Picture 1: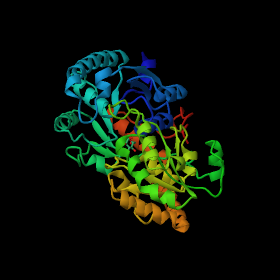
Picture 2 (picture 1 turned 180 degrees about the vertical axis):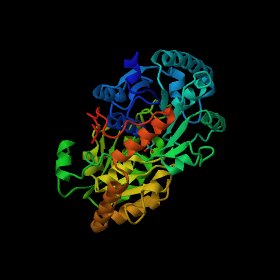
Picture 3 (picture 1 turned 30 degrees about the vertical axis):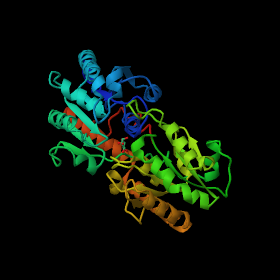
Picture 4 (picture 1 turned 90 degrees about the horizontal axis):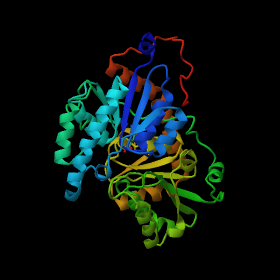
Length: 415
Ligand code: GLC
């Protein structure tokens, strides 16, 4: 009995996506960085995917609890009327199985990532007497019904973690002491500026010192503005043969309308007659080389980006960054100092700033240097891990181990 009491507290992590978007990559950072002497984790996934492969490598236990066909496809604006009944049945089934899982696993805390996980664990908290922490990676849904339900369930959570001030502003009441803003950390050793030729080699691109690249590293989803990017750079590529565009990423979400978006973008590149000037690379598990290949990094989200982890990574890689002015991007970039901000969903505005940077290598260099030094000052992984560990401790009412605790063998496996 005393053995069980001595084990670190068990946290059940419930996630919405089985793939590796920004939210899940942040979770992996956390699981990798927190010493196993501090917490144990058990992850609940909607299906097997890239996240499960990462968990295998980290020796973190997990199990699959499917959302079911209709609920999987439901997006932030709800579900199509046809699928509504099926989605309700999926919710009931999930809640039943989730309740049994929690009773069996007996965690001290439930910690969620993603909207579906928030809503489902929030509903179940009516009968499961367990503290719940939501890690908010995106804005509270705009849809009236979903937004109201979300706000109602927020009151049942022990703590809310927002990845930016912009995201926390949507939480009610925004300034409550249970809402914490914790920016994602960047692993400054993994995102170390490296030479372009070494990066090209590792990505199997033909090394060519005369080639310059402007590109995006992004989940391929319509709201990320990859179409705006292609339209913005089209005349610039045609006017200057040295430049190439690059798009790195996959469509990863199960939500309706997101699958097959890579095909849509390739077709757009053909329609714009720049197919031979755009390189498409799949999702990169270790994306540092992709950033290193880019002379200009663009983040063209058409809607406010909740935080913009890729922006922080590109800044850490000393890239000249252009991002659309919304959400967390505004908190990360001081325009003209460590990057450039442009209006969202505005082809002309983006084109003007890309053209400006294409023409000015000195400015690219200056912005890159300032960007990296800002991330080194503000965004270290160790700070992020410690802040998150404190949130989890506070939510459970557990105290962190005293300094000098003997079991410190994996203080920082991520670093
Ligand atoms: C989500 C958000 C992104 C954020 C990431 C990590 O993927 O869309 O903006 O960087 O979560 O919190």
